[in-house]
Image (tube, rainbow, N blue to C red; front, side, top):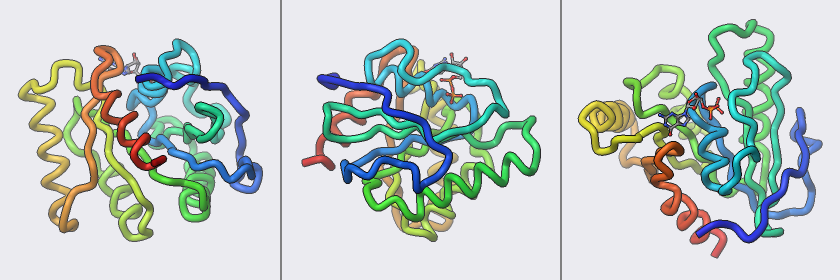
Length: 196
Ligand code: GDP
């Protein structure tokens, strides 16, 4: 199930710096602490590819990993740090939105949502922005260690219900746990299908 090879390429702060090889890419984004590094490490079967728990407020970068020598996994900086300044938030916004709106090789964005908490407005607002701008995305719920536990199911259903207030249909949804190593196969299969 896992990739034949994976390697860290580099980190960038601007779209213009991102690789120009033309390889397709899949990006991962979510609120800080959503479990993004853990999920990336699980998917790539590595302990430390994405550093777990980066210090909030530290320089945020777009991190590129080359997988199987033919596509990129892109680790986008987390959003929604409670403790960062307005200026840092603005920097995140510009960096990520510029990337998402203009990166032609982006195949699909994985938006990570914490399954252990009820729907958060910051996530829902981001989802509507993605929709308005026609950015292709899927949702990966994280930390669903005990799925289908009642609480997690309730949170996921509530999120879907919020989305269906404005969407005709839901995007593909993955339910994952990095701790339990669950849900990753479906994500890898999805990426494999898009890659053809
Ligand atoms: P990031 O800030 O989004 O990169 O999140 P991290 O991967 O650093 O994880 C944030 C916190 O959530 C850490 O304490 C992780 O141990 C925890 N975490 C991440 N994934 C899981 C998971 O699948 N289950 C549980 N129970 N905790 C997780």
